Length: 584
DNA sequence: GCAAGGTC
Image (tube, rainbow, N blue to C red):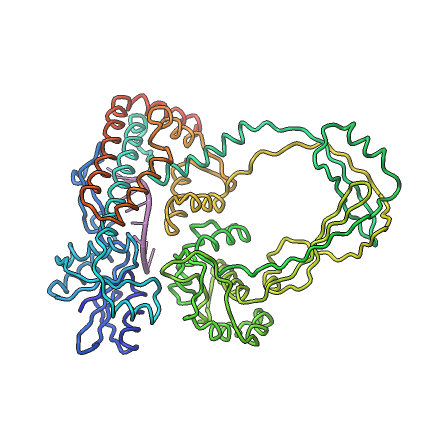
């Protein structure tokens, strides 16, 4: 029996689970291995892929458009990365295997990875499927004992997604590049199903900022003395219309504020959920200004060295098949975490605060293997992961929120921390200021200063890479594994720049061109519609529906592209003028 | 040269 896995680490796990750890590692090349064991008198070989081994390619192999003729080819034809060639060669060796089982991740991409290996490397579509939602002993064994059929709908949807994205991206990118090439041969422009709407998000934000009309208002705050501290009391009406209004309030004040009520609210704050990729990308930007792409590449290194679990996950859950206690015991090695781990080891029940999101791979957690020789970024991210891991098992924290009300309609808010709980290990990151005062009813607070200020409403804040990534996730643009890279491309192309993200004149121009000539193409509705159709296709496999989706995009593109071609020089000039203006 | 999606 031949079992196809999506990646080496999973091939190994499957082998380990199915053989009770009695498997052999067989080297195919110096760096590429597969697995062998005997089970129920059957020879079983588990071979990994490394993601997609095949890609869509232009049959005409010319940098021209419209390009509507495509075929699947081994990936190394396109990217010349030799590793995939050997992986394909490894599968080729098993062409005569009668019993084949696909055990890639159970989603449309995974199904396609398996299906392409079946049809192109093995020349055999007669295969079964292991279906699992987690790579754990029980799930893998259950999947093996209940082999299902190949999910044809998943494969069809996956293939259609590939083709649509290729048609859309390759054609629009070539059209833009060729247009500007009339004036400069070294410029590469691009556009894609995810790039377009993402760029548009930045564009829309830019417009909001441009069109923002600040409104003036006045504030009145009091600096008040309390136990040798100076506290700022705010007026209940946040925005006053005029200085006169503020002055009137000022005139009504005496020497003291009179406390008439103290409203207390007890808050329990749950510990954070375990990290998924997006969440750690947000934190690593927030705390260390490491951009999402860098974060992923550092996580990949930590994963390859065995220090953390698989990072490309959207899961916020750590399943109980993972030996928490053992990991915590191992982490006890580090002095800096001891004091936070101690209370956990005493607990009867240890339970993470799992979130809602789930995935084949669990949330990111430290494996317990003690890292050696980490570089600075690896150390920072490893520390984030360990802290998050410990925090998620820790107690809720308890805060008390106070609202101090005065007769004069000024108020003061503050928080007291009653019990740190999980926040203890997060203390270094928390911006929250906790205070501890004893106000009482009838208290008189001396007014030290009356502060009247003119202020203006502020425009929306710019995106940064983390917040734009988050927005992409909310809108379901791209995937956890690709979002960071796509943002990077938009910067590389010169469409976006800056730590707080600005759209460049070129980025703006690209949006203008499409909005002006072809408004439907960057419309988020187009992506949405395609997605809906793909969802239908995956649930109800139908060849003619696949053809319909592809023909529909070809129809849209062929009208657009023939018109584009007739305006190519004009559009190219328009774009080039913008580039020239900015780089001379 | 180009997309987006897997992977290392």
